[in-house]
Image (cartoon, helix red, strand yellow):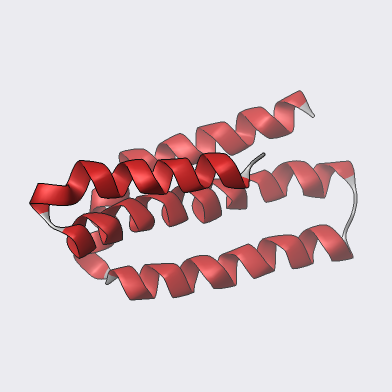
Length: 102
């Protein structure tokens, strides 16, 4: 389990580090759509092949699904609320994510 979490976290960091490049090629809407398909693929793989090695490898997709969703959401909120309410928008997003994990 620890190795799987390490892989998931490391893959998130890679996505966060390269996130600005995604917006050069895709709109926010397309990133949300791509993320949805990768999310579905990840859970389909886990459901069809429930073995420890597959679970560990599927954690690479977690970095894409969570990392890409988070980056796209932050970018979208920044565009939606504008500069004057950017901190408020990000705070509401962070609060919503925090409440959802409880």
